[in-house]
Length: 199
Image (tube, rainbow, N blue to C red):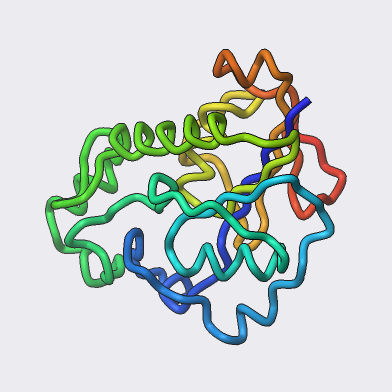
């Protein structure tokens, strides 16, 4: 069996104010960095989005890790909406269309959902090609984790249905053949583990 854990970065000031911050390279606040304690999980190999908030979270969760940084696991690129909030965009017609149909409409100068998910799968392929051991951890963003759960969770759910807490996430367990064939995992568990197996 192969376990791949997906951890979301800790909360940033922009997250607190519900500001779109896909590719903006923001740091964790000092209070948040100290709030994140080492995970009671051990892994053979670590990967992270190359953005600071993920690197910082990875080193708080796994103090002795040396993660491989992959740009493919950045959050969705919100283009010209980066740094804006719902309140500042709510009168923008394009934004309203995106809210109504985010599967088909892309942010201006940003990524559509299909393009975003394709990029993530390119990163996933890199992880599998570089894999050493049977327990891997990836520290990334909420949208990336939703995309991977949409693709690999044992029970299919819509991309937008998944809830991904900050500085926590999910651990997916695959057989070697499931992983090789790109199939859904055998089981899914919340991490840090609460003992709740979700399929």
